[in-house]
Image (cartoon, rainbow, N blue to C red):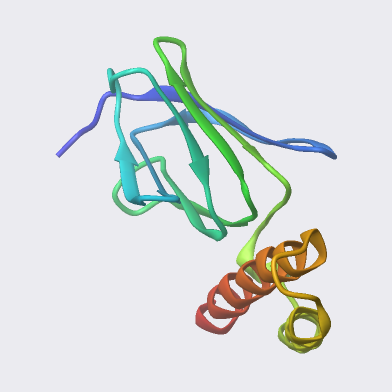
Amino acid sequence: MARTPFRVEVLTPEGLVFDDEVGMVSTRTEIGSIGIMARHQPLLGRVVPTELRLYKSESDIVRFAQGEGYVQVSEDGVLVLVEEAQTPGDLDVADLKEKLRKAEDDYAAAEENTEQQRRAGRDKRRWEAFLEIAEGA
């Protein structure tokens, strides 16, 4: 089934990662998965580390390992603002395993209910999600 195309931009602190029309966006917010199509209700949500999928067509899907950030849906399209967005092919499994091990160690060493523990917990969730994406690529 053909979908009405709409504009999507994916931005990281390093700059624009994606800017094109798609038929659907699939990501995950803090409260669950979300699929966004043309004429979606306006929305501002917080996204969590996951695989961001941008469906240009049923068979042409642009994928990114997405860090934490925000998704904004407006009448002009969708804006995804994330800490990072990497294509699955650019992910290094060994590097991600090392980053995950360090985040787990940092989390275990941090005092309960501190910013250090929260930061290590966010890093742990990001590297777990990125590792899952990399191993599935």
